[in-house]
Length: 117
Length: 116
Image 1 (cartoon, rainbow over the protein chains, first blue to last red):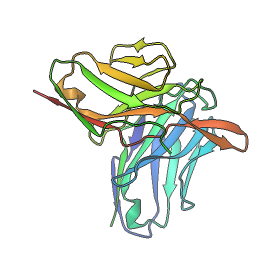
Image 2: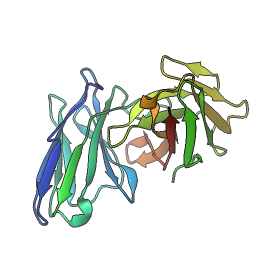
Image 3: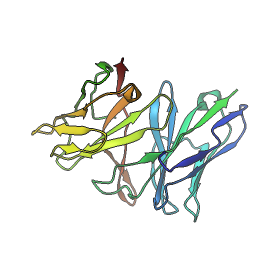
Image 4: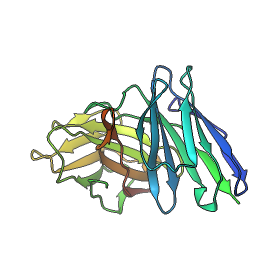
């Protein structure tokens, strides 16, 4: 158990819909990262928040957005869903802000499996 | 834009040491090497990291060559539960407007299958 929780575990929705994925980081961790894992793309970094502020963006689509709240939990919002958005979405947390050479240990949650039909 | 090369798959007998190689010939002097593993559809799990000295923890040992162009992750006594995809990662700099930030770039990794 990494200490990172994600809800829901599974989500099935239709194209064009909007969903929200939730993540609670490990106690004491200020950074939250979101990743997408699909069969053809592997594990892709989407976005990072540190203590409520966006720190880094990866391959995140404009239809996707995220935020981190004062209690440090984070939500990933996916809108105008397409079939290709079906994937596993992982959240990870770390103490590190992400701007030092050390501190690459991230602790991953169990993921949310999103199926768009 | 992964900076590492790993064999796609390896087999290991249960109870034997599993030695997973990784090439990172373009690594720069202050970049760390990280190892993660992912058991089928679970979240990746951090294993170990190192800069130039060999490292050991309760899960594994990491041997980095003197020129730092390659490393080997060693699971000393592999069990069936060690069957997973193992990722060797050199953090990639991601330049943001506020300065440099790092991200983990996961490649395809090595599927280690531990056989009974």
